[in-house]
Amino acid sequence: AKQARQELAAQKKAELEAKKEEAKRKRESLVASQKEKAQAFAAKQQKSKKEADSKGLISRAAGGTVSLDSLGEKPSGFFLFGKKSEANEKKAPAGVPTINKFKKNPDGSITGFIMGSTSFREGERVTTSKLASNQKVESGSVVKTVSGSRYFLK
Picture (tube, rainbow, N blue to C red):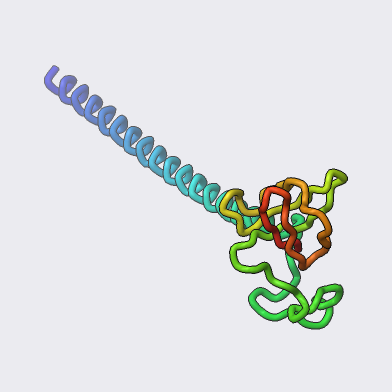
């Protein structure tokens, strides 16, 4: 009977050791799985950050295109084709907002995209009040509205 109890105790001890080993393997497996998930998540975040950055660069380019011009260098050769000389290009007088891509409306007002104004956001589309009479509406000129506002047309 004593030997049977010892065998039973040894069997239970062996079963307990097996359970401990199984629990240890499960813990190790779970930790490894969590590490893999964390690495995959970090890689996914890094990839989405790179994609967002590349989309941000493209969206800042005019017209949704990427410029082939050398960054920070003066353009030369092919890149000068169709461009006006910088020496001939007029600049807005100090304190006078610029209206880019303007058009004259039938009512005598001007519509375009404003830059350098304290009243509007940069690049916001605006329509002026009617222009005062006898003014040249052309690129490089300053126009005055009936309300007294002045704008440089570009």
